[in-house]
Amino acid sequence: MDIDKLISGFGRFKKTKFKKYQNKFLDLVKNGQHPRVLFIACSDSRVNPALITDAQPGELFIIRNIGNMIPPYAPDNDYHATAAGIEYAVSVLAVSDIIVCGHSHCGAIGGAYKIPKSKKLIHVKKWLELAQEAKDFVTLNSPAEMELSKRLELTEKVSVLFQLNRLLTYPEVKRKVANGTLFLRGWYYRLESGELEYYNDEKKQFMAMQEP
Ligand SMILES: [Zn+2]
Image (cartoon, rainbow, N blue to C red):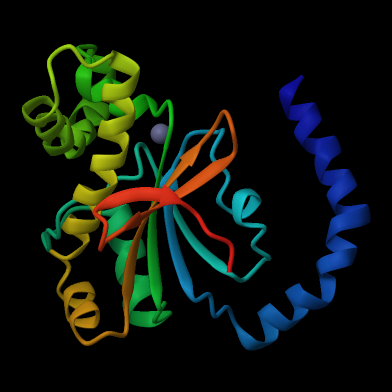
């Protein structure tokens, strides 16, 4: 049973890992969290931000949603989970970096090419509109004979750039980027090989991540 597996996993966590991190958690409770990075990733169960960056508790403020998308700034009266997370990270936690991390074999990007029709997926269908610009860009700018797997990978990467661009519709993000107190970064994680790429703004392409 999956739930039993989770509960016995909790038992192991409590006995071993929690003990290892206990002082850290006590410190984080006493002094509050001060993560420097907002990490925006896909909800996909195969993408695990803390695992791939070996980040410790307190280091990453994480937003996960389907397709690591950024909805446009829309200060209306609706419930905007992703926008609220961005606002909190930028204006309260004052993170210095926002990473939008796409990944290979992303179902959301696949979904942009095959929009769900089911009435049970009305929110998913609406949400996938956020990948539309990337899909249209790739369709317009790549050869028609391009293999589907290559097309999807390109769309996954181009989508990261469109999402980063949409972050700039948030006034505080725009202001802090302009005055050099906030940096936006596009990453791409390959599930099958564990490789990580980053978008190099000067070279205008994704490149293998260099360890410092
Ligand atoms: Zn995904």
